Length: 196
Ligand code: TYD
Image 1 (spheres, protein in one colour):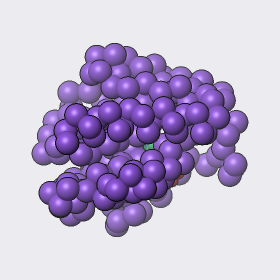
Image 2 (cartoon, rainbow, N blue to C red):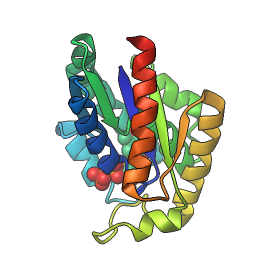
Image 3 (spheres, rainbow, N blue to C red):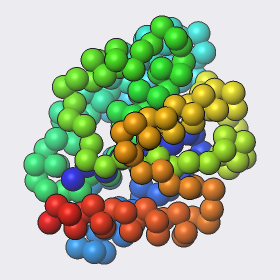
Image 4 (cartoon, rainbow, N blue to C red):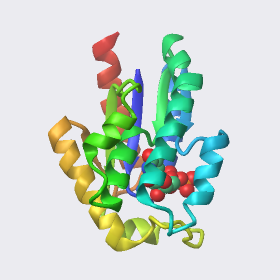
């Protein structure tokens, strides 16, 4: 099963992915925790590009899709075949939402086409909270181009619209870590029960 945690910057996807992975291990599941941008060569290149505002949004979209394709076919796919529960800290939905929020030139359909060889995840959860609160949580100085309130408002709106359309789970992330994590754990166990 492939579980994805999504949300605006500062929503807690990294913290909650780790905690979820540890929890599922204690329940006896083999888990594989991973993230995008990946730690591979394309992911590292992407991280440099995230510091530069003047890159055309289509370049960002192509790089994220290339990173995902490589990451999926060299890592995620084989773990799924070996029956791991793969937990992704960001995946396809980040591209759909962030890249289409960047420019009207970028359509959801085009992002889907770029990613058409990727298997859709089994479960997507959107960690939701107001952008102001999310940015207040950032401990390191903000240097990435997406980490500004106006942009994140657009991203949040798109995540919530997409969640409605696609039956993704929306998790209120504006609460204590323990409370949010319990909610995530409960939903994941329910989904895992359905397929076992
Ligand atoms: P992020 O998870 O914030 O990385 P880190 O916590 O290590 O800094 O991801 C970096 C940024 O990339 C974040 O603003 C979301 C954005 N992003 C996209 O725009 N498209 C994508 O497809 C992905 C995976 C991330």
